[in-house]
Length: 442
Image 1 (tube, one colour):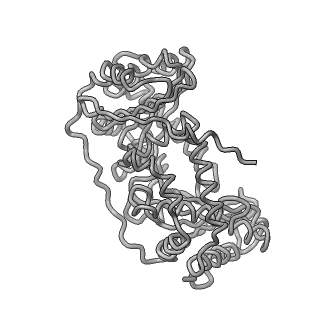
Image 2 (spheres, one colour):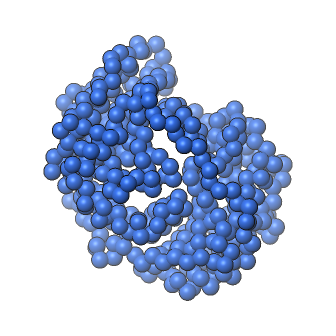
Image 3 (cartoon, one colour):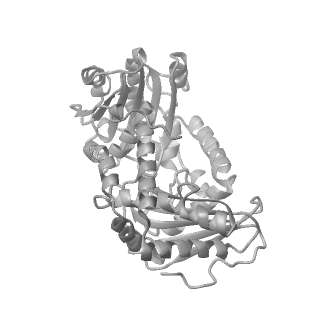
């Protein structure tokens, strides 16, 4: 039985202000326990990697744990650990974030640490080369060592013809090894500044408390008036249906993955992103979904299926369809099932029952996220960093509830079309190539 947390506290108080140096601050009040989640988000990510230097944003994320003018290499981690906290960092195409979860009484200390490395990181050649080796190993483990990650990487490179979303966040292996100390220093100088950052503090705090601490720490850093604006190339109108095939002997049965290029939450017209999220849920959200019923239960050609709207991005988003074959079979069988299901939704739409069930699932997920201090802080931080307003985020539930059956049908007809798609198959070496033996269905 699904039990949704008390809706009465499902939306914490969220406040925002700016420091004199241009740093935006968001405060999320949560007084249930004397702990805080402290996050710094930079408005830069792999999407700002210079051409030919893929992976530089992620590389710099690693180097941010090295020495500063005040700390020795590794001391940041030792201090946070000694204070009983935990920390991490994350680079995406659109953001780079650093966060700590710690007792409220230590909030000032972690703010001092982050404010220090925002402007005072000291890079030395020996540490740069060592960290590049670490990143190469990270890529070998997380990408080269994962068949589905390799397929995903190749598909994104096909889906995005002119946009940096087509380059991997970790970087291409042949480019990572060529990154230099100067590359990292230039990126740091260009993008790491208070006026290009967002501070999120969630927990047992007040706005006045956070303002006082932020002014005493981050407020002492000078703004960088030369921060480069985000000027990314746009995608040309998609004209061609694309397929690709990757052979990998490590898989037991074929994998079929399809991406449709769709608007992100930030770029979509009001209500369209919510319709896309609901549509993806109906297509492949659980074992009542259309993909699961058709591929797993009826045709018995897949052991697993799924669909997802990947819309948290500055620019475009994706709807993903996945089918993991239950046995060795031509991948065209799974692709054909994808085509059938999409055609049915585009022509006939979905049912009231499907839409109501999807709305309930999205609302439950939203409430559970809001009820989790760290998840909610991350959700707010990511959204604001890519340019969304807090009011827009707070109105998501109302927009989901307002989506109609006609909206689902309209959005499917507009975006789930062959020319906006890339279909990829991963098969064992020597498998017969049958991924594109018939014309795409419209």
